[in-house]
Amino acid sequence: MKNTKAIIGILLIFVLGIACGALLMHMSCESRMNAFVSGKPGMREEVLLKRLSQKLDLDEQQRVAVREIIRGTQAEMKQIRQQFKPQIMQTLEKSRAEVRKILRPDQQKKYDQYIAERKARWAERGEKPFPGKHPE
Figure 1 (cartoon, helix red, strand yellow):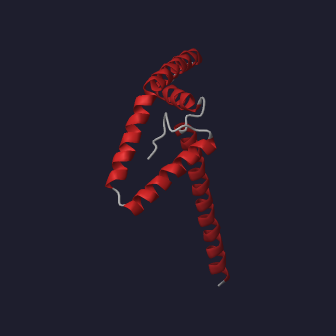
Figure 2 (cartoon, rainbow, N blue to C red):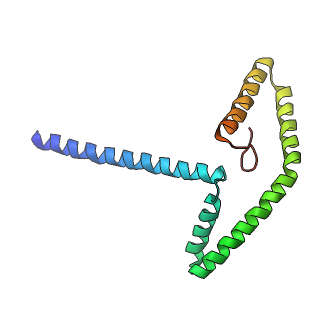
């Protein structure tokens, strides 16, 4: 009986350790993914640079050069996104209106509330729905 309790206790500790480890891993991955998706400065750069360094076995001089190339590309992409942002936002607004048309009045209210909540969340975080964010 004593041995059974000890074994159950050890197994319980082991299972709780696994559960805690899985939870911490999930939280860590989710945090990194959110930072990457939200476009936090340097996050995409670091992820791409790390991936290329590992896959290609880059030396320090190559890493510095690749980092500069990535930064230049990101700056160019930002300009391109800004150039097309009005057109993209117009297209998104058009799609919202089309979706709204096919909804019943009770669904329209829920849809409007959903869109308002999304916009409020972006504003609260100081984020914009573009780039890297999908409004719906």
